[in-house]
Image (cartoon, rainbow, N blue to C red; front, top):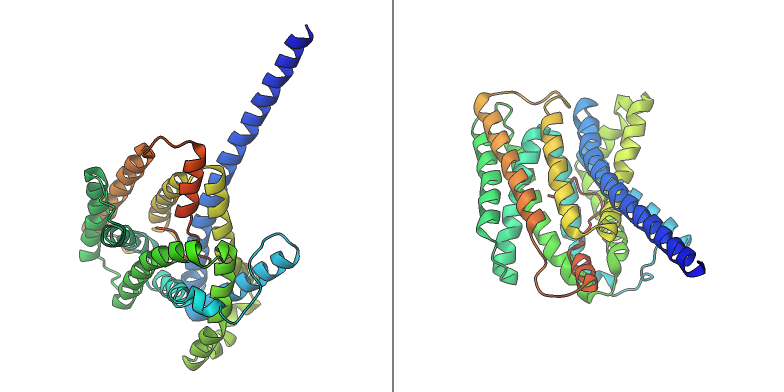
Length: 346
């Protein structure tokens, strides 16, 4: 009887533990999806709906928020990263430049383009990453991955052919962001393996080293004065969304870590793709700058279909080799490449 009761208690504990684990998996994935969605929508609302005059000032706010949050978190012993030393800049270069450019050009593209076109063009980053993996790492994608990626890119090109709200500057910003996103992944992985800095250290020092050059550049461009004279500072709803945009970069990076920790890097990728689909359609009604045309809408839907196929193909991938959960966790850690302040992941 005692043995039976002991077995029952053990089974109940295992069931409770399984339910807790399942809850953590689901809640972390939902948290990441909401964070990734919100940073895109909030940035778009601040820059377009409220007509805030400077994406450069908003990027300064995101840099400042990352520095403050990580500094306080280290003082409270919530996170760990190395103390400042003179050789840190050399050890992490050129990541700070890539990080700042990725943030600024991403915000510039968000301001200049409608969300459906922004989301469609951002899928070029997947193509660039695929090519970079082939050239640098020798990883050859499967036929199904190639088809899904070319569908995403082909649909985006079709949509661009009949984009009635065409903005050359916005297109250039997004394509520069796509290139920097791919470069950021490669260099982040390299620095995580060699710089002994950790993710939080890279996030903190990337922001710290770039805050002064970013401020000088923004001031020389005259955006500090334009932002200071902006009349919306008296609107509490705008102020809340501006501050939310500033801290969302860090929240997004934390949600990526949390989702990958309790699920996998694969799940994080899939949630990011699904989030972009919702951004595409909701973005037709947010910001007021999307102009409908048949060819444009058809191209966007083809790009979305490619995203769904990419999600399905990625989800069906099985880890190679016979390694156990430890190998999978190690692989996930290598794939975990958060970058604070970015607009989205893919």
